[in-house]
Image (cartoon, rainbow, N blue to C red; front, side):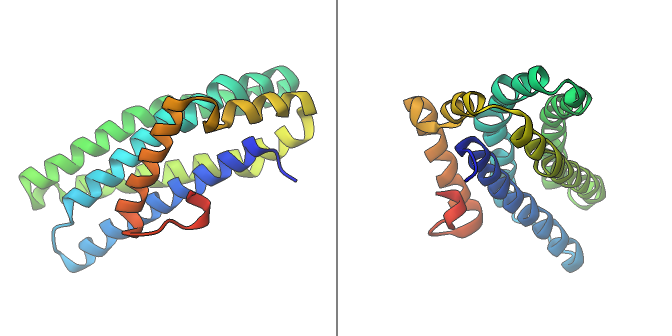
Length: 190
């Protein structure tokens, strides 16, 4: 059985991945049809992609998981440094993508190509980031962290420990429902 911290990370990745793929699909669909996108939906998706990592995901990885891995598995440090740098660059990249979307919405077709290029860069980079965490970091963590480490990480990744965090998590689930499902959430989002 996987530690609950790993389950939380993977569930967040599933939700983020669903939004990223849906965002990409929306952009591709409007490119091929030549019609403007639903800017409101794209803005809501970008808000989700900004809010969830900042409030629930990256902070916990950076505060709890990565320091523990640096301590227990020094050879992993360069990978963790890269992931931390990607977290920081991701915050800048989402602002640039939000601005590119606004420029497209306000300025029209002359700004479509720049927005589409920024969207594809962002989605590809983020998906690649999650793949490194899932395919490399988590397996190493499962091998080198102790039961005591996992107990602490499970507690840290639990949204039940902080009422404010629980409220943020519920708001993010509602946003996910709105931008993707227009109804009930799949099991990985509950």
